Image: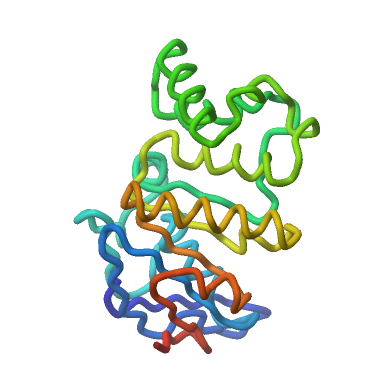
Length: 218
């Protein structure tokens, strides 16, 4: 990112969410971005995740300039390059674990047999080989989070974005999740950007930055 600005109109007043963000995240990085409520974390994550584009400045993801993309272009890039893990898991409640993991592969145009195998392989890697046909409500919180990670990684993205992922977890489940992220980063070289307000969670990352009033601080 270079010189990224983003503003919103709120009740007729212009609110500056991001004020000239410069950020470089190399492949294999594990970065935590912290900040208080209203600091611009959600806006930054939306732009990093290609859910929004900046008003000014540029954003290159794997060499592609995202800054002027729209609609379908952004959706295709998201599906190919980015995996998302959210605080509330966002699993489809009426579909099995393996069907949840298959979902991004459907949008990627992968055939039924191939996507079933890819989803099964990823769930096995997450230690859920015996839970692939369980519904989300038949899984523990930690198991649901592993399904969410499997879904995020099944397309082999170059970037994993985790937005307050431990917010609803107890301390044991949170530690297990962070251990898994660390393993994926070290063993697979997966690039991870973690958005959090928890100091203990951010401490697990290799690099930490703070966002305050729309500006990044080291």
